[in-house]
Image 1 (cartoon, rainbow, N blue to C red):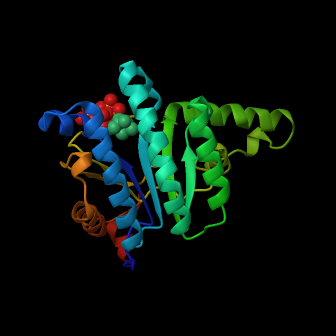
Image 2: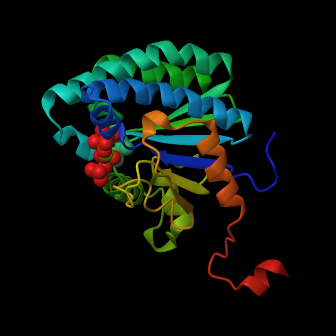
Length: 241
Ligand code: IPE
Ligand code: IPE
Ligand code: MG
């Protein structure tokens, strides 16, 4: 059950798999494997705590610059994770939404994602956003191109464009903005994640490395969120009125 001040949308920058592996004297990919287990826990925690939308930053456009064998291992892990977890999403009526340039992902992964998005598209209570080959800057560039295309064919008048109409061209067009952004591993940056959508999100920095992230930490983040006052530029007095 969700309390009245539970965030509707939590977005997580899942960071620290490599450091978790180093700390445990294991190869980096083992950290990523454990990270995949933490993803399953987070999904369950979201549903159990009434968080309707969970968006996970799984692979950034910049992550292609990692060593080739790590990128290959990550793609392999992603494929296996999807094959195993998509039936689970369907069973639990969770809608899958992929954000990012997913046409650049390996074809087998694209097929899995596309089919899962189609199968789950009518589930309207819970959704999982997966940010894959995602970067806010490429998202904005893609949106500007799409706006230009729409203006060229006369679908829109560029002079009428405001943020609300612009956001219809973002990958997240049919998702609410995140209320809470969590980053694990103690890093204090957004790394090109949902920069526009997080304009008024609360940010929670967790010291926990992603493979150790559990329901207790998820709840701690929600509790911290509940104690914040979101003012959107107004004064406290206005908010309390
Ligand atoms: C996050 O963990 C997973 C991805 C970015 C794919 P990292 O692999 O970035 O872990 P650290 O930051 O090296 O500890
Ligand atoms: C951000 O983590 C990307 C994901 C969690 C997928 P990184 O580990 O890639 O971020 P930086 O490079 O430390 O900023
Ligand atoms: Mg990292």
